[in-house]
Image (cartoon, rainbow, N blue to C red):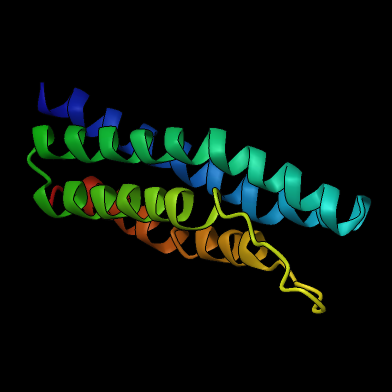
Length: 135
């Protein structure tokens, strides 16, 4: 049972890592290169609202499987990665910046969220390594 839980945790952490790489290094840059800033921001916001919740759940599931396998540190680190994903989703994605009268608003929340999502990569990689080592 522990071997199955360990493999499940590693696979789920890898899936979360793949989503982070896809979002941060493919989707966001391509959206901002291809479309105007407003449309790209809406696309990134839509993907964050729908995808980061699933990312958080996948990371939490990886943490749970890590705990079941006996890799307490690996499970804890994966759960921290899930918490970070939810922070990106709930802190940055739903924001609607209203322009101040007479001032242009430069919307950077989604660009920052893409960068912050990339910072979850080392956390999920550490979860994979710690789970593989059974720590």
